[in-house]
Image (cartoon, rainbow, N blue to C red):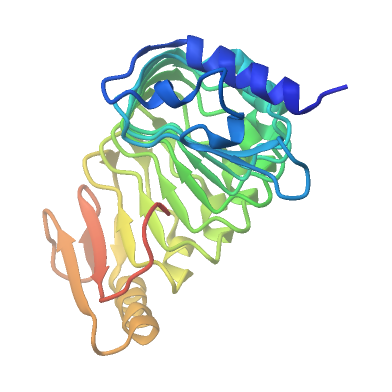
Amino acid sequence: MQTNQTDRLALIYFRDSVDEDPVGVMSSWNDSSHHYEWQGVICSGRHPGRVVSLGLRSKGLGGFLSPHVGNLSFLRSLVLQNNSFRGEIPPSIGHLFRLRRLDLSNNSFRGQMPTNLSQCSNLEILNLIDNQLVGNIPDDLGSLSKLRVLGLAKNSLTGSIPHSIGNLSQLYTLSVTENGLQGEIPETLSKLRGLRFVHLAFNQLTGEIPPAIFNISGIFYFSVGDNQLRGSIPLLSATLFLLSLLLVFGATCLLVLYLRPYRMPPAFSTSTFTITVFKDRCPQILEG
């Protein structure tokens, strides 16, 4: 049976796996204080001593992420963004079925993404941007029905974009730029009517942009440049897409259409294609 002592022990293992601490964050993690007083740790009000949030963003921490973090069974948020953690992401994170936010971006994690992240069935934000991850994007991520943000950019991921991503009906941010992804852009992305930010640039994607994507009226950033795409976008589809953006964001927005190279009607070239809408108080791309 897991208790608050289980959580304390898991945190001690986490502390002992940190070997760089330039600002002394771990100094508060000592035996003379309760772990709810430790910096970055938030415990439950209903279940005393059970850790619900571990947030240590931009603390200069380095080391390995202890697999014992998977014993924090009440954890809802794990944010270690912008540190120097290295090694593999422990598969034990897949045991955290209450987890809603996992942000390990801007670190030096290596290896493959844990294949059991799909067991974190309440996950809403998955941000692994700017690490050194390799291998394929797990197809099972498509079962995360509550996922709203998927950030995998700036890694070394290969393979194709899973068609199962089209099952993420709540998704509004998809960022997989600067990887080595191949294959075609899945037609299933056009099912995601809530998409707002789509960044697929700087990969090795081939084929054509699925035309049904341009029926998603809410997109305010769409980038597929620097791939190996072919074909063209019918002028009518592109025009309606731009008009729908203007209708959604209103006349106060600044609309920028970037096409390189540009070809006159009846089609726009897709070798580099970025549509961006800038507007005051636009929603953040990755919540933070």
